[in-house]
Length: 90
Image 1 (spheres, rainbow, N blue to C red):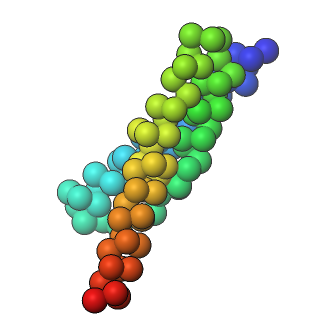
Image 2: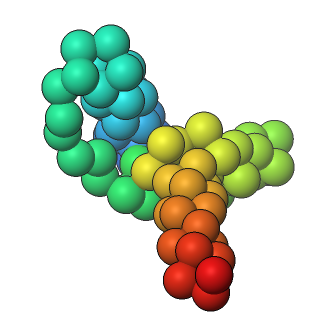
């Protein structure tokens, strides 16, 4: 039963993660702007990994790091906010 829930979540999550990276590369190469779906791919893939047998559960954190809409985006937003805050202070 766990596999029946885990596999679709993993497939959809990985598809969203790959799509996010494709959009990033399109932005860098073609200067074509699009929006990514923040957190969804990483969270779905993490949930899918947590539903898998115990050997895969230890990898629960990896999709959150790999998904451009999760930790990488949050770090970039934090850097942007800190820069704006520091510029106002001058």
